[in-house]
Length: 204
Image (cartoon, rainbow, N blue to C red; front, top):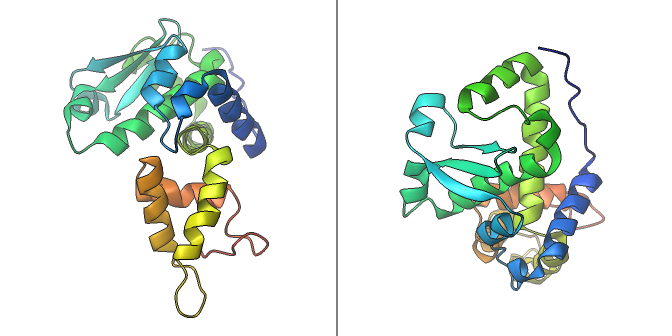
């Protein structure tokens, strides 16, 4: 396989990608909860169930960028308790489509994806996954609504000593944006709330 150049995006570039995606279809973000399925579909990408994807290939989803599909493990799609995981999984694969399409043009099957990953190497694959997760967080928790909501909720999350209960704050944000706790906590770090000039939260 010929050498492949893997892209390297700065955080501000990923934030801009998310802003642009939401701006194109504002009907997907009329409140705090972003309708990620609608956003994906309005971008011309179809979401399809794939039987036993997780069991056979140890992944919950993969994008077919040439056919404009996101294939998702059927078990995850059918799991009534897996809504938040499904939303983040869809957002992450859509993120790959937004920023990694040139890499995935020949990936039509899970085997193709695994072959590409072996060729790229662990360090590059980890970088691509970090980019996709960061962009997924920005899509599901857009800065334009996330930051004001943090400021609102943080006030109610202060204890008697005036310190912010990070767990309570992240749980409230997870509920508001319909994501899991871990995603909300990571988004707080992405937006710089661990820095003293913002809220100085302990996000370690």
